[in-house]
Image 1 (spheres, rainbow, N blue to C red):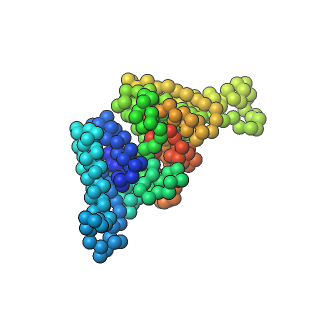
Image 2 (cartoon, rainbow, N blue to C red):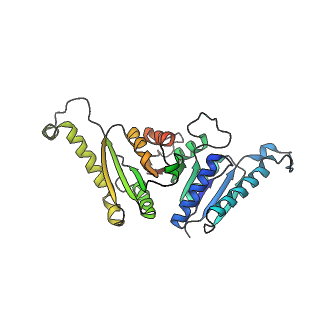
Image 3 (cartoon, rainbow, N blue to C red):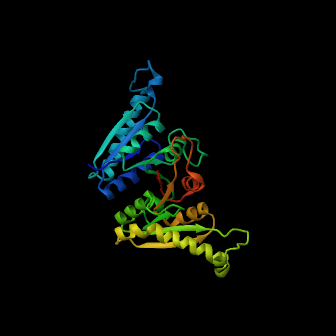
Length: 288
């Protein structure tokens, strides 16, 4: 039995956009969808839900019912189940992640401050989950997959990484181009390495970046021969390069290294920049 896509729903506008994206994604991959609402409504102990004063539990039921109806109207062929949990949202979604193909979240939740670029729940789950998390954000073209392009940020250890496999599966399912991008920079100091001096420092670092891209995609290119891969190296800071190029992508896939036994945020600068500023949905795929 294939794992479902898990969507965190809360009734917010961003949550509804994430739900719509997740329905399309589930249909694309032939996966079921599980809608999860989590809240510690027991803190309202002693309050009896009424029609005119529903309380948190009744609100949760209403939100998931509305979300399930919206999903059914968007694509009736996608199997949908709902789950209401008496738990904090971050903890509940982290516990759902091992049993999901991916956890899908909106960029902001109900009650988030309007001036925040990214909601605290989305950031916390993306930073701490040991399995793929997609934060649905971006402009209309990116949300509607109008670019026919998946953007993969190639990191230092991308060869054989879950992020590369995830990106290839997405590109294959969508029948679109995979844009594998590696940013590079030339150190300011002058090198003493003979090979570098022969090429010129800029050419040397560009060549290294190109080799990393080739190595990263080689195995999955063979496994997914129908995916057209565009290998690109760009001089600049990785987080700036990927955010800029996300304007022409339908999904940005980045890897994340999590230090086992540490519960702090482990995304790094590239992941944080993508989640806060990308013009399309962002998939954070841990390396383990």
